[in-house]
Image (cartoon, rainbow, N blue to C red; front, side, top):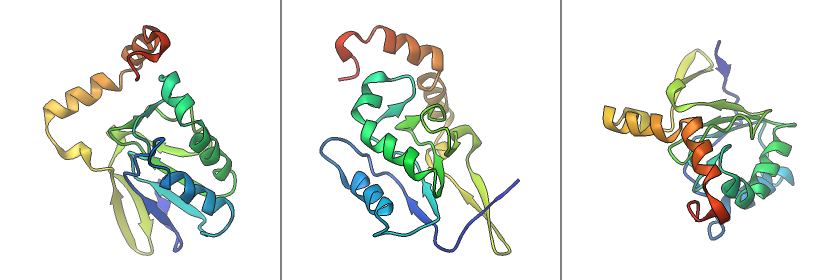
Length: 155
């Protein structure tokens, strides 16, 4: 099944949101306040410097943007293509269509055309694919989170 691309869709990639780089949060607030209007938002990966549902530290650090995305997802359609800095996100964004790296490119329909969307890091080489498989492994991330006393590893 294909998703239909709307005329007023907005695409954002690689914002790398963090404490020093707040533009992504400002952008989301402008959508909320209707300064920017869209009915469909495509987040093309690496929206955060790092985010995974297993990392308590980064969930805490990014809570404001996470909450705002979840709020916006109640009124607009949001599709989030996971990147190499943000993954295992579905639990954080229950109302957002999250597309894992291994399911990219993701196809959408626009008029009579089929368009393939991807964050882009899935076309590198098998070494990088292996790294991505390990770093996204839920057991590995859970163990890392468990031993991350006082967030020493995360920091």
